Image (cartoon, rainbow, N blue to C red):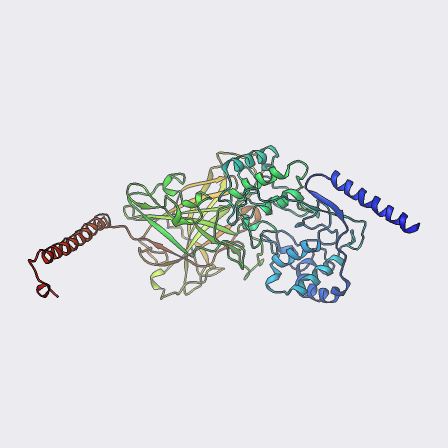
Length: 583
């Protein structure tokens, strides 16, 4: 009798569970208990944590380790149990698999590395279980603290990497409408560069910024597959616990979440990703295209457009416009240049506001001048005249004295090998970071100067130098654009101004200072040394030589065919015998 009643109760509970699951909002599976702590993993997990994790996350997991104050964004505070990357609903504990993925792949765009490169599977599982014990406000062992695993649907276009090819434009356009309707621009900016709200803070009161959609390799949870729209759908569905990013599970249907993801995904340029750094591979050679006649001084001139302005172009050479114009002038390459904060002096800067530049270059034989278009994403500009924003191009001052691959020290040179900087400092006119998106952008109050450096403490502005110009500049929707111009050679009275030569590989590096972040002097973002080359002009003979060679080749082929037919005809008619034919 008891067994019969127990079976009836079990059937009733199963029926209630099925009914409840049917009543759940679309996109959520039935509730389940959180993954309990594996006690047998804690001893090893503690060892791994105090060897690898404590320096950022702190002894008790409160995100207050010795390095925390120097990191942006700050390390996660585990005590409240709020984790960003989850497949569970907003505000809920993550699955153990979610935590393992985070530890293994890291969080791109932050200081959290991919520990899967250094720890084995057992160590990762163990440290994840130890981290669970650091949560104070929740309990992974509490079966009543249920979690709901979300259903994110599947890619409706069945596209594979790089994912954007094959997505209909109609879906992208509809995604843009969803972006506008749900006011995503209030945080992410009018063009998705994260420049919408400068006042955001996380749950612990620390400043935080919205994601830059045009740098999808920095999306949290995107490592190993940065162009996959699933990363976006997951974040829209679950939100990011501990941040101002809510979930939109009830406001936006699964179908529309994929359309919104298609729009966001279309904004990110396709570049080959370095597996170790999860960043685009650097273009270490910056080719300056030779230009027939003068170079356009307007950055919006078609002369400065590149194939990568179209995100559907995955390779520079594949573009139909790789060669443009009636004069067969090559379009310039838009080069990716990685930046990092210098850590050898002073405040040991670990958190520059900018981590890359895009550089495009042309030079003109007619003008005897070179142009560099430098572009970079910066969410918010300075309004303080004492802390202006700035960007600079650095060269060896005495290029002609360097031997082979020799280069100066890449941060302001040294006494034996000085450097020469072309620097632009600026403030945006009528700018306020809380303004609504301004479609036309802001003009910059900008000035250019030249600097010589022979070390950190020996940086001097050249008062008598005026060869470097900024011929165009703009700040628009989170992007700074500065167009430098300088003559190839100067009078160079003291030998400390770089003299540029054609067809020669010349070292070049880049620096950037965020005035809003109080960056100045050695407190900056900087690249290592790259190379640039002023590509030679294309001789006119290249156009008619090919035609002449083609005519000669065709004529030779025709002559051989004619001789073969003539010889066969003579042999068949008896005018020539086999033994008389030339060997």
